[in-house]
Length: 100
Image (cartoon, rainbow, N blue to C red; front, side):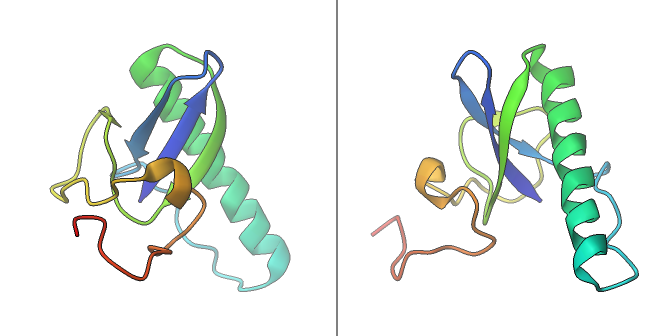
């Protein structure tokens, strides 16, 4: 899972939760899902702070990894070319490839 993180100083970057990703909730109700999202956000903020030493302020999901990538990276290339626009989406919102 890839996330676009904005830090207190205004800098931004992509953090990937690889081996530290929380498990999906067993219960499929709204409360469990919200608690899961909070757990994921906290895990990403903790990891981002460990990597950079900076304080993360905002965390938003990315459909694919993006540059700049911070910390340990997956084998997936950085397919997301406009992370500021795509942040918050679990799939690419564009109707065409960014590489076109």
